[in-house]
Image (tube, rainbow, N blue to C red; front, side, top):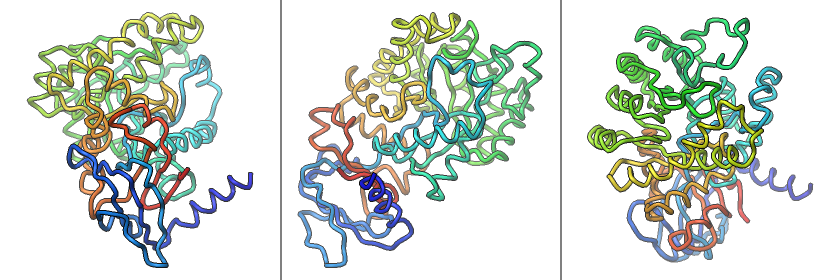
Length: 426
């Protein structure tokens, strides 16, 4: 208990204070090049990187020095697909009728902290109930500890689609959800739904352009938006400067999303060579979420009671395919941004995704860049994040050892700094 209180004191005593910190780093992967720089000093002024110098500089008396000489130092990781409000469990499908927003928020504080302690200083939350907006704000105001959140608030669906909140309910409970609830059936309703997300405090927009594995519905692959509806979503999102994402497993819905101007395809399970070429032409990112695929497949195969019966066949079909498709897309030259779908897979295990990406051919440094350079490009925050260089925000993580030799050590982050504040230092 004393150690926990001391940790909280050290963290929160730094917040809001002007300070200079020297990080003595054994090895630095700044994510600007393709190799590591040995024996470097990163100088941090307040919450920004002031400079990076060769060697271990001697610090003035009033400067904090942190010894990371036995560690590899990198930019803070970014996960482009999480759901911070919850975590998948066998009780999920009945629990939604019992728990309150307060229940969700209290649980999510734990998930937020786990994510930050795993080295993920920025995440894109792609759909919840709206509690995710409150989580983002609470983290910004330092009420709770967690990553910087860019949230879609509530995902957009068509009637009966993957993010229709009434799927699986009794008819008398369904009501008639519309744009207010994120359910649309025309281009005009698409624009209304995006504007409602803006009003509700969203930072980005997500649509579910095909069926999904975890919705209580038979079809996990069929197209669920027209191109005209997708174009209307993207046009309205562009008015507010929102990046857009499309959940997509099946090929037809995926193709419509790319042609409609969506900025990233999530999952991409049954992506075809034609769609890969379209994505390359249009600069569309793939966010693979291999972690979620592996998790649902394992649960469906080994625990017949974990999912409702209608979901198990979809999990068994889709789960193992995601990693294979990712490998093909990467080799074809599709742009890749790191994403796990944590909340389906456990929060805090996000770094397993690096291992899964490397297993099918992505070099370790490229995998790390997918969670730094590529992710910041997708979020349009590259001016401040994604690399370690002068003027960038001080989001910095470290591990003991060399992740270019053993990517699995990224699952054991030993140092986490966000906005110049140290949250973890083992």
